[in-house]
Image 1 (cartoon, one colour):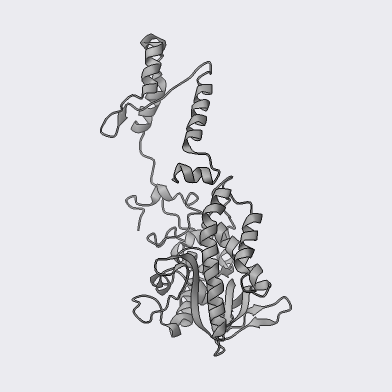
Image 2 (image 1 turned 45 degrees about the vertical axis):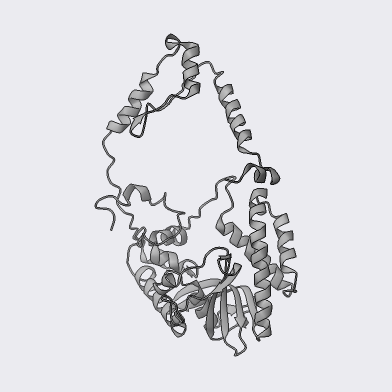
Length: 379
């Protein structure tokens, strides 16, 4: 929670306003012909202390003026005494061979390997989650906003000194909550200033942006793998650098090493195969990727907002993939996943790797809380 002076400075109603509004609603509801007030008799290990409001109601009406509702209490006790619902089995969908033959997005391979059910619900059933009305902006929303800002900047030729002003204009046009914009703007502008300075520094070293926000694909074992590259740079020696923008903390080297964060490698495979083409079918960028970079807009304790990180096992790092093994290892993980789920007959088990952080879009659909952690259902 922010301090009241900060809330007032941002034009946000404070807690006293919300408390008053809730009291107004309660007073209005108490004017109904019949009112039921419920309260807990016990709090954890001891009896609940009656609130002053409850004591005043009792003092005003007296015991004879209060009709104690027993039916609701009996129903609540009956719920506690009800037999336990039968255990729901862990979902393991087994679609047909024809249903399995779907394309794989570069961002979906991680989901397929860590939580096959999520991939099944999204790519095979075609179910998409809907954001609740008036929901707070999600990290995905922030990522979309950042990509739109950077795309417009690159399309304009990446003019020096124009990235932050462009972001300010974009944020003003967005229908995001003022609270969200006010908190996020200082962090975003600081990180974008770093991106602009870093790109200028790399340009002086002979590195140029070859493509940005471009779609590409390639076929592996007859299965189409497609993805969009945030940015691909051509280095001074002619090789490529694959860049992925992140608004938060990028995946760890261990996640990449274990095959649960493969987007950079997949984009690299597409670029290596010349899979990025324009609307006329002409190859826009191709070459041998040698750098795999996350450009994060998050805060680094040493450098402030904005930093570059590679999940490469080199120097003093203890996890990651050796640079020369990134593409071969990515292809190995990809071919293994295709053989198991897309061309094979393996079930799309829910939460195959439950310890990995992942998406929660389909937790309710898989009835996660009804089977996870219960005896006989958790593997």
